[in-house]
Image (cartoon, rainbow, N blue to C red):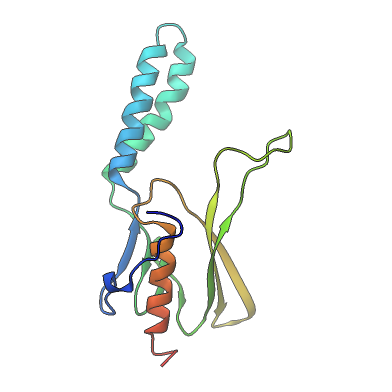
Length: 160
């Protein structure tokens, strides 16, 4: 999906959850690729093969899990199963593109995207924020996530 492509709100339902998980396929592909690479270099560089095999195994194990990273629904925004904020205390959600800077001062090849959620807490004054890292292995795009936040916030009882 293109960064500039608009996400239709027709894909959301006020009574359903919008769920973001790690993509099982991407984890499996990455794990198998790293495991194959470790096997190739094992004869000449056994310690390097071990270093590569560890994240390969971790990626393969993670690809078997069905853990929900974010859940957005009529109640609010959940992060790893815990309610981060309900819509009454929600302030804003925005994407941050933090381009890594190399020692030479030039921009890196990979962007680092995060979702920044601002909210109030029931028992504490002030505004709080949480920066949620977004990875290339998540099963929903940045555009879909922000569209879901907008949809559920607009359809919450707070706005009406």
